[in-house]
Length: 104
Image 1 (tube, one colour):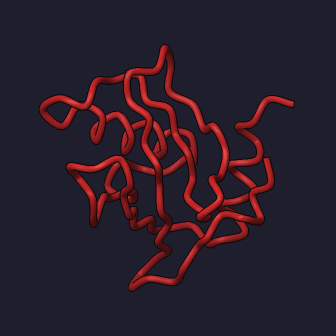
Image 2 (image 1 turned 90 degrees about the horizontal axis):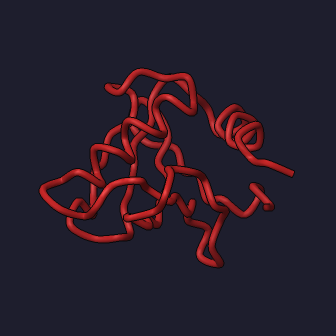
């Protein structure tokens, strides 16, 4: 996966990334970057009653070594395409930490 394709923009107090959520996976995992520059994330939760959103925030926070308060959905709570605001990490560090999650 080429993480250089991931679009990361500066946002007030942090960075913003687009995510394409794929709920109902057997386990939560980073799957890659789509053609539009969004991070594809498989989620081990159904898209019911906000469960997939909670799993997305919990999974990414833990995977990036951040607190849940540092990862927030700012747009697209009811859609597969979401915008996340992440604090306490920069774009280069985000890509490095995501790269460490990938299995060769």
